[in-house]
Amino acid sequence: MNAHTKLPRPLWADLHNHNAVGYGKGSIERSYAIARGSLLDVFCFTPHGLWVDTPANDPKMVEYHRTGFGKVRAAWPDIVAKVKAEYEPGRFVTLLGFEWHSSEFGDYHVLFPGNDGEVIGAETLVQLQAFVRERGAIMIPHHVAYRQGWRGLSWDGLNSDVSPLVDVFSEHGCTIEAETPHPMLLHSMGGIDRSQTVIEQFKRGLVAGVVGSTDNHHGHPASYNEGLAGILAGSLTREAVFDAMRRRHTFAVSGDRIGLNLRMGGGMMGDVLPAKTSRTLSWDVDALGAVDSVRIIKNGRVVENILGPQSPNDNESGYVVRISFGWDTMKGLAVTDWRVRVNVSGGRIVDVSSCYAGGDGSVEKVNAVEAVADNEVTFSAFTSRANARPISEVVLRIEGRADTRVRVEAQTQREDKAGGCTVTAALADLLQRDEWAAISDVFSAPRIRLGQAHGWSETRLSGTWTDPHPGADDWYLLRVQQANGQMAWSSPIWCRDRQ
Image (cartoon, rainbow, N blue to C red; front, side, top):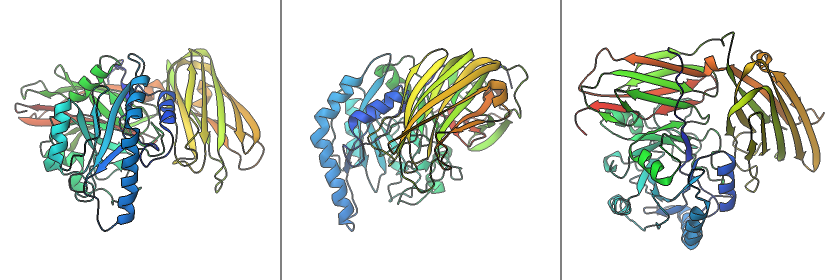
């Protein structure tokens, strides 16, 4: 491995998310508040628009969806107005979109490049593709690895000119490969069909970039462990975001915002390069936990497996520290409201990542990082056993030394009872142990943990690899896995003379 190269900062995006405008939960106003509070750069609310071939033998389900589609059409002017109002070039990019279902062809979410668009009643995939092409929009298939006919994707119908990207991770699970720590378990359409996975389609000649997006139905963008997209765009504008997506300059993460980059011969992830291109790949990873492995995949097979460092360096210049909070009574459904202040002395906060969990715990409350300064972060959140996960987390990248100290002060409200706690430690100590506190002296009281710390030598890796056997038609991608199971996948680089 080489010395770490500073990565270009990705734009973090949730391109597929739902709320009560349709048949999800939570208000549209809350969705945008959480998108901003979760420190997303790009957000698209994608209300359910149409299911063209609903199963006739399930009338209750058909009516449920018909009602939801009607809500979306009635609210469409308000949806468009909200997209316009929330867009702040250079700070926060909003996209207009909707979702189209098909039992036969699979599901797509349609993203428009501007403020104009409508939910089209396209009854066939070809009609939808023509509409998208005419509007300069893109359409991204998702949960593609279900069996075809059960709303898995009809890969033969995919048209790359309007579908430059494929969504490979969401709350449905991982669809890029068949055997994964993140299986498709939560829905009624079955699980992964190996022949439907994205890796298998790359083997068959697919040229498409990869993204993740939550597909969360609780009005909670960026809900943790439900997928996000990293977009390598030149600026934080709609035009730059759309250009990067069309160029496939994207990657997918399962939950932790793992930065990565993959380059070859003047090109980068998503590019199609000439077959004669020098086959030396350069890669960089900036993880939120200890890197377990970095794998280079060529033509569907792992050709290089780089294991992460087993321990930090003696003289680290920076650290990753995770603040986790929640847990609570095993069978309780109470909501705990948290307000947390984090102070760093003798160091500097260089990045903050939210790992907030959404779900049935509340579809009214907002999780948000409220303020970030060089030495202080404040955030508010709610946790509940009724959420997808009983804890939420905020992760800090800290430039500092072994004696840099982190202090976390939490104030809480739970079942009309105020509580709180404080934890503090030096970074060197957090490499050896975690610091804990509970918000009250009740045995099962919600808890907070300061720890899961790692030096940058464990989280920031770079390297090169030269293919000893280049062929006339090859593709390469990077797969990263942290010790905590969180993963990231780059879009491929293709080397071939055909498009």
